[in-house]
Image (cartoon, rainbow, N blue to C red; front, top):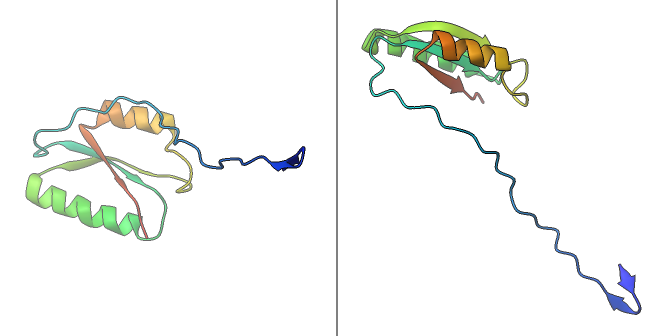
Length: 98
């Protein structure tokens, strides 16, 4: 943009906007725990979670207490489902496919 015969330089860069949130406490051991699984709906996410669930059940005696498939990878998980996982599960795993 030109003003009074001079150019006005504009810096198009921005600083990232980082949402604040509280990190959930980590499990010290997964043996015997109830796990919630969230599938991001991308290709191979379901297969990855199924294989992981089998490994966790066989090696660590975990159980899959809840499985949720998001309608789209670009959308966040339904807050009600996240709340249900928090109530019913000891931990959660989110799979990203592709």
